[in-house]
Amino acid sequence: MLETRAYLSLRENAMRLRLSFFCLLLLLAFIPASAQTDTTADRINAVENSLNPVVRLAGEPETARMADRMAFHRVPGVSVAVIDNGQIAWTQTWGVRDAASGAPVTTDTVFQVASISKAVSASGIMTLVDSGAIALDTDVNEYLRSWKVPATPQTEAAPVTMARLLSHTAGTTVHGFAGYDTSAALPTLIEILNGEAPANSPEVIVATVPGRQFQYSGGGYEIAQLVAEEVTGEPFTAYMQAHVLDTIGMTHSQYRTPKGDDIALAHLLDGTPLASGWHVYPEDAAASLWTTASDLALWALEIRSAYHGESAMLSQEAARAMLTRHGSSQGLGPALQEVIGDLAFYHGGANLGYRAYVVLLRESGDGVAILTNGEGGAALWEEILSAVATVYDWPGWFEVRNQRVIAEIDLEPYAGTYHGLVDIT
Figure 1 (cartoon, rainbow, N blue to C red):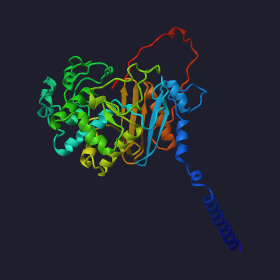
Figure 2 (cartoon, helix red, strand yellow):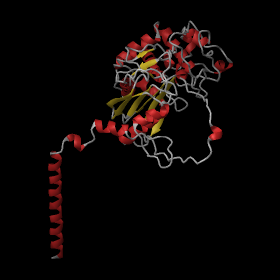
Figure 3 (tube, rainbow, N blue to C red):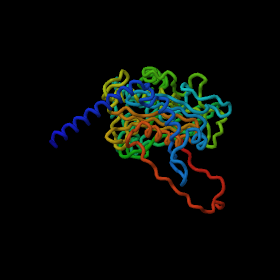
Figure 4 (tube, helix red, strand yellow):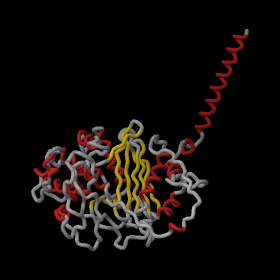
């Protein structure tokens, strides 16, 4: 009898569970879809209100609003494109493209993305590898006619190759470039490589044995640019426009000269606009790309598609070479990092008055492109990235940071004006 009662009790409970589940389904059927799951607007709002400051005082909120953090970092404008599961989920902008005029940033506003130019340029050079015009492991002096990599004891030990130039392992000098006022005379590529006036950067030489170590070099990318121009017989900017930007559909993007008048102007660390609007970077492969957040997201997605053999621009072999470590955490163009069983490829950018960042996971297709028109943008994009990763539940991207407590000390002796190194491309 006890067994029979237990059986009946279990049966009644099962019937109740089925009825409850059926009622739940009926209830969900009458709830709008927008209420059942987070809408895009919900997620944008969540990101906007959950930035994670890197340093917090004890007792302060753990998260902050976008507007507050933009004001804190003195960044006038931001454009963000979020990539979720291999698709651009949304693009959103905040603030103004010009602090003086107050003109708002739109999704079509173009920003300088500085050294991110290198990663995009590398994909264009890899199309020349696909065509057989360039071999990755050939001494680049075999392609150069108007200028040669200067011979040094280091080049006698090992050659400068395209693979080494693109992975910053060629031993070349000149980390970055300062740019030029819009009214200034611009140097030619040969003058840049030779460090000759009106160039404002030193000569590009090989200072360490090629292939031996990672040494970030914008100068090396200018050698790569010259190789591309020599083998194609056309300006690098024109080649990149036709074979990369237009092919991908980056309709708002262009090297050196921004398209249209929807332009985010450069702003200094104190938030004031740069008098000339922006600096010009004739070092095209290294630093001169103007683009939007959504266009940059399209580029990242194209590299991922190519890796999986689904690109009309780049072969799978070329994309896999780009996303393979070459002696360090550096690929051919993008930097690489393992993230919870996946591989993130990414690059940051820092020109005068601009900071930008793009990252995408190779397998999951999750990532983000963040563009800012202020020199405080590097700290800001890190906070934005953390917020996006939290809202979209991307594990392993950012750990929750412990707050730091600043002791109550007399700060008067430390008052004054401080000058530090400012990152440039």
